[in-house]
Image (cartoon, rainbow, N blue to C red; front, side, top):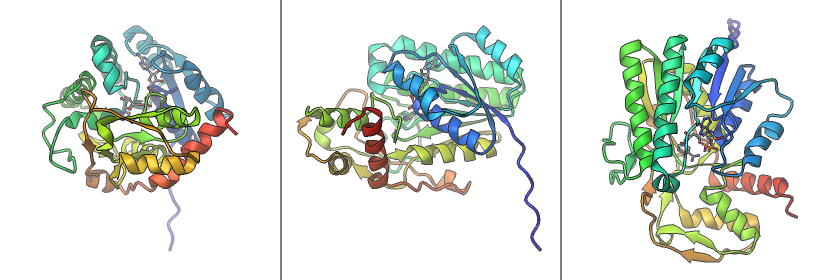
Length: 327
Ligand SMILES: NC(=O)c1ccc[n+]([C@@H]2O[C@H](COP(=O)([O-])OP(=O)(O)OC[C@H]3O[C@@H](n4cnc5c(N)ncnc54)[C@H](O)[C@@H]3O)[C@@H](O)[C@H]2O)c1
């Protein structure tokens, strides 16, 4: 006899960086399954602010949600929001996110990524939040030579200020779990791509330059590979973790196939419909040649990445052409 499925209780999720690439896609997916979301974003100009505004205005069009334009460095503003909103769970994604730009302004990275995260951990403990899931990064593995990267590998030697701030947040989160019992999981995201993606990331820059007939900068002369991870897979994995988060945990979240940068560019060329002109460049300081994820831990929650680059890049280029009105 079939047992009736218990109806899932609707929850209120606070998403920091809600106008960001991952935050906005996550908000949409959570609302699609019936949850309430409250977003916070400071709409900084690290990249085109209009894209952030449009994610909220167009991608989330027709949805009912609350959006605060505020800064996670402002503990008082966070306190007001937590007090008012009666939040159940936190997904903390707001950050200064670029590896290369963290070398130019490391202090800003420290302020937003470390202090901002502490403000959120403090508020979460005070307001008895059940689960706190936050974005760490594959960059914490630095120049780890053991592949694939596993959560049990030592990550004590980051090679950029950005990576060091992410590692610092993992350490801080452990403290808040240990002392206050906050359920907290750090998700180490591996190179995320897809529609509404970030203009500072390779796929966006390559696509833009190719449509404009300009050359693309290919670092380490193309000798790079990544577990490129499609946005929908990131969203489903993040939600699975939020639903199951308990104690303290660190998890990789990445695609299940290692693709070379050259293959990534080849698929892009097929979708843009022209060959790229390439500037073969040396390795950038702070960057790493290979990031491959061991995702067996997250798989145990029943999660599986399902989108290959052939499909994911097509979806990105389709979105790009529509958004930027390219014939
Ligand atoms: N996209 C990736 O490939 C990737 C890989 C590894 C880790 N991550 C991490 O995932 C998270 C989300 O990344 P994303 O790709 O969506 O980046 P994103 O830059 O698109 O989103 C981050 C959002 O946070 C907001 N923000 C920044 N500082 C803030 C502040 N002080 N107060 C309030 N809001 C602030 C920004 O305005 C932005 O909208 C980040 O923590 C990033 O470090 C992303």
